Image (tube, rainbow over all chains, first blue to last red; front, side, top):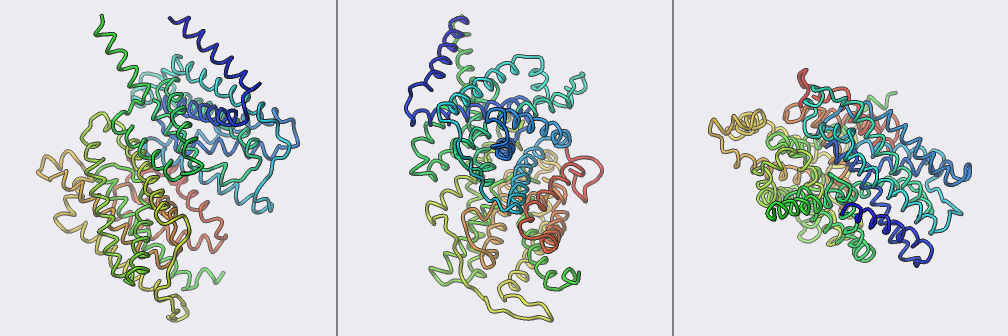
Length: 305
Length: 296
């Protein structure tokens, strides 16, 4: 059973990866969005799903990565630029994470949001001072390459969440979520684990941001730090279930299809549905689709035996 | 440097401060009695502003009358939100374990729904109307009559609300809930009723403030967001759930913002507000007036 599902996963990875070779422009575009949000939602789960430190400003990493990348544009080779963005933002997260993670619970949630807005405004002011209200990105690699790189990031992010969930490290993180004080008392290195999770969940979104900028062809602080990106990330993880890797997968697939159907013609309706879904899931299915499914499965197995 | 001593700036700071105090009062009540983090708070300001705008353009009714209508409509929304969502949530032990985070997600959903409904009905364009726009001079201060009226009405209502919460029987019950929810139930306070009322009153006051704000700035579906952020900065500055502290912090933030902008420039407004906010959260999360121990 286990070997079979592993084979299925490998087959799916190969098929989806090789799509870059022959799928139409439109399909690749949808795939790009799909994998972008999978990478983002999985990264969010590593911090917020595991530790319970809910970040409402995760777009700050996405936007900062895009900004670093656009500053490097033309100076270094494209993919090196993407890697450097990840590195710079990861180190930045280690530094700001230290004071930020001392703040707990609701304070952290609001702080994470404020932080994203603060960074956005600093970037806006800086660009206005340099007379660069928008920064175009000319000569980006073709869509096939962008699709493939986003796909790879999504795979890495999913594998990372899968590993974290089952590792000692992840057990430590989840003990923080259940009771931080108690975890500290029995010797979990709370501060260090949180900081590490914070940095880990920052790196992939920043690289995603860099690649996203190549797809959109232009960097605008308002778009790169758009709170809707944070909101979508959170909603996807919550709808799917934020305690394990398959959860965000389900949430993303569901919402990207919805987005594809509604975003262009009825963006307001899309947002209203998004809001209603968030409310419904928090109230009635707080463990998400995946949590609900696995609970169901466990119960039916129990009945069978 | 004499710009910082001008009465012009002082008047502007007072107007902003009074409105901030009023808006954050509602947020504080809701957090204090139920531990709900209302991130849709600024959207009530927006609804209040649209109510005043519609009343003026359709029926030629001024904001001084329609502000009560705005209060009633927003209060009604508060009732609806309590009955449909939060009553259920507050009695569900599974959701109570992470009440603040969950409430924040719920209000986030509500905020998105409200904003997009308003865009669907009124488009995303900015609206506005002219009301008492002639300029009057008091000493060397020049301001529109509308702003003067906002200052007076806003002060009266916010002071009345603070006094009411301090001295009336009902206000005392709310304060009891803010201090200790379980103990209040034990001494015979109807917790459910007080919770619902604080949501209704909190929403209503904010809608009223929105009607006042509509005479001073353009009305858009997203105008509420800066007020949400400011209100959070204020109630954290004053200590979460501390009504009197929040009132003072509202005035303080009004002054910091207006004088800060005068010193730097309007593009620094957000950086200023978020900067204060982050500094407070990291260095003094119990608030300026709070006691030594952190709130959690």
